Amino acid sequence: APLALQYGDYAYWQRNWLQGAVLDEQLVYWEKQLAGLPVVHALPLDHARPAVQSFAGAFHISHINKSTYKALTGLCQAQGATLFMGLHAAFSVLLSRYSNEQDI
Image (cartoon, rainbow, N blue to C red; front, side, top):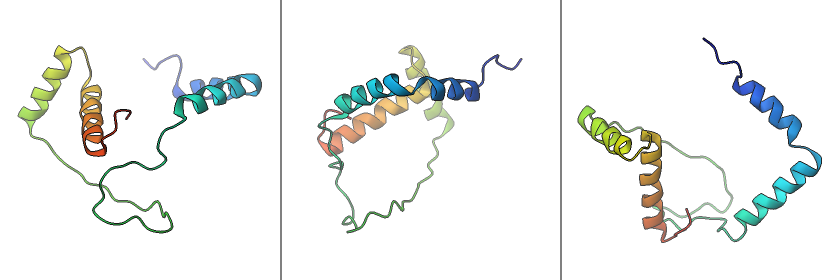
């Protein structure tokens, strides 16, 4: 059966809620939370940054075999986590290691 509430319902509610004083409070909160973060990451690059940022990028598709998938899923389930949570944690560790940053 379809859910009683859909994402569009939530988006509509949030758009109506996030106005005026609530919006101001949220902006102050998030500006405080994000203050001091580096604007540009410190990851080593394989080429120099362009003088003008173009936002042009690329992507890479990778596949894992079934046994690796099952092992990762099992590891995550044993920790009470989803596969997404486990992969996100692993990616965060990778970013931390290569950028020498603690706050990822």
